Amino acid sequence: MLLNKWYVILISTLLCFGLACIYAYVMLDDKYTAQTSMIILVENDVQSDEQNFNFSQKLTKTYTELAKSDLVIEQVISSLSLNQTSDELRKMMTISGVQDTPVIKLSIVAKDNILARDIANKTVQVMQQVSLQFEGFDNIEVLDVAQTPDIPSGPNRILYVAIGIILGGILGVGIIFIVELVDRSIKTPDDIERKLGLRTLAIIPDYQMESEIEEL
Amino acid sequence: MINKKKYHQMGSYIPISTKEPHSIITEQYRKLRTNIELSDFNQDMKTIALTSTFAMEGKTVTSINLATVYAQSGKKTLLIDMDLRKPKIHRGFKKINQIGLSDMILHNLTVEEAVQVVDDHLHILTSGTKLPYPAEFLMSDKLKELIECLKGKYDKIIIDTPPMTAVTDANIISSLVDGVVIVFAAREAKIDVASRVIKDLKDNGANIIGSVMTRVKKKEHHYAYYYYAYGKS
Image 1 (cartoon, rainbow over the protein chains, first blue to last red):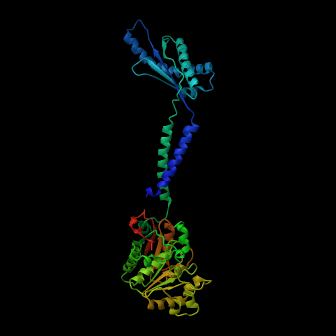
Image 2: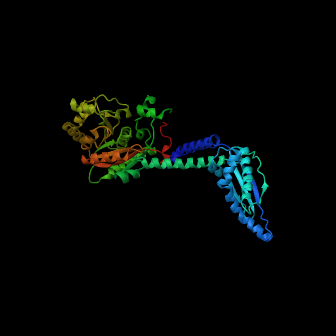
């Protein structure tokens, strides 16, 4: 039943494939990711080195929150005179501590590769400045300076297209099911027997006789 | 074979049952005949009318073939075209619809004068001269008497009628016959229309023998083997 209308699935799959291609390759802009990393070093004479190391690991969480604070974000915006709002910038930013290390990784996703790099480096710089204001926080060292990303990191266009194809197939199957449900025509002898209570005396296949006009 | 639809509209009504008596499609018409015969042991199905919900469902083709297979079984069969508005039966036998049913009553023609002979067992009675009021004609007592008279001369009388939804003719005819067969074209006939038609016929006291399903695509049923060599004479 489903395969009789394979062309519906084909059409909807092709249509969604086309739309996904247009969306992914025409409407979506390239995105660049600039990555930088920092290391937190706690130097305290009172504690042992191991304790210091453990403490720095714990501080990574504090620093990730610091990076996302309005204080840091707004300073980055004003010093680079960006158009983005602080919320937009926060969305561009991914910051997380690398597990079991005192290292923090910061990545910035932007439509422009140079901008991504600048924001990343500026954020680290601002974080260093801000941390100076608080006692005991003056210990961020830059591990890797962000480089200009040459190759766009996203969007994952093939994924969009693949999703388009899958959704198109599902849509086609759905359309066929809805049409079958809505279609109130007699399709099988079973319909006649169950819905109309009539016996089916014969089933005549679809056939065509050649025209009599041709024969004359 | 460029435009199949066009061929059909031009009227490919030649009975496959004559051209290809051994094809499996003809076998389906024989099955229809057998099932009609077995449908009611208490009543002899002498006059059978075929109707459908809409036009072009295959009612005329089915009537022609059913009459042909009845004739092939040795029964003296008469096929009457009671679709007085769009008569088509004569096309299946390459006959001319000049005199027929209406003339028998209007001009008091005898059966021999009006009926056209196809072969020893199969005779056809075309609709005849066009009438202004077919429904009134069908309701007349004269027609009732004529059918009773024909019943004495033939073993089987197959009647082709107009579709039920178009005009009231088929409803009137259903009360003149022993049994009615409804033709449903697969995927074309609508269930709600069909149930209304069945109700109309039943309210009218018609004896519905059953239905015939036509236009069944080979993909939908396992009829791929029905397709061997048809239409290749």
